[in-house]
Image (cartoon, rainbow, N blue to C red; front, side, top):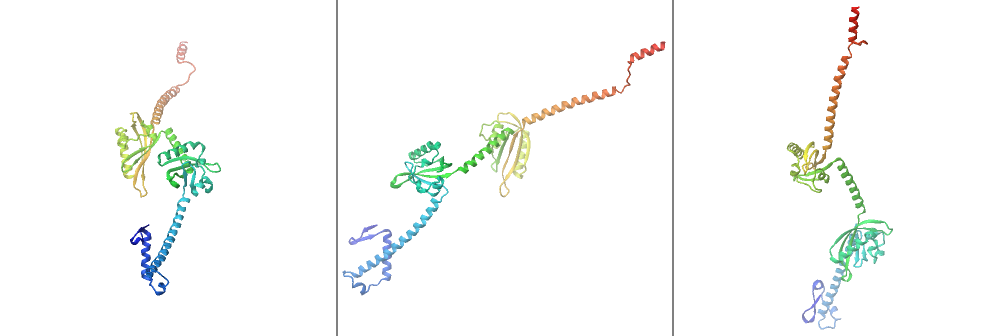
Length: 373
């Protein structure tokens, strides 16, 4: 930038002004006027003209040096841009307001299995799975309407027709000439979806096993004694799904004798890491009585400090009823078998009497008749 100084001579400002000052300083320190320098100059003030030319020459050299440094910095920045943009782990796309691909990095081209040059001016919607096309269209419409960044999960299609799950992060950006554009970050989440499906399947199996075994899980975070438990605990104890009471509220469900046992077991586990396995009576949130088996153990961190207590809760009411029924049946069976043993002893005692084919009353009558005869 220049401004007019004295006598209409341009006065330099900014970076050029600094270079000018540096050049004048170098000339004043190194260049000395000589007759040989002066005799070729027909001007009125040849020494001044020579000084200006020498300053201008050095100024140009300094500018060239600055340009070389700027060029080197630009090359370094370009290499950095290549590393950060082209070799990023996610695909980067710049789309026009009409959905055409304006720019794409190498990762994005590799995700779609298309040469990067062939992507330019192609509609990005062409690579969206047909069943997700409406969702993608509405997403883009909302994005350009509100200007608020959004995220979207869709299925994209590679060039060979192979679909994959993708997570899109979209935001509004500025294009050439100030036109609005859409910047899209694409991540392949196929492996994550597979892991999520396996986890969902395992969780479903665990929940089904818990329902069949009437088993729930719980944990108490220390030192705050924050209680957390599984949804199956809500079912077992008649709480609304997703409800987790405080630890004092949960312990209040135990009658007094059972409360003293479980409270002492929790204290010992918290202080000394002593595991416990108790069979206790408890009331549900609707005051339904249960027999429960409560198991707990300490959780330690890397250095051995106890940071939580976790365990399981099982409804064993039916098992207790069956056990009681079996016990009663065994007692009745024992009583019946006792009577049978008494009867068998009596029979064996009677059978010890001498056997006679003639009734006793008849034998005695015959004896009397015989004597008479």
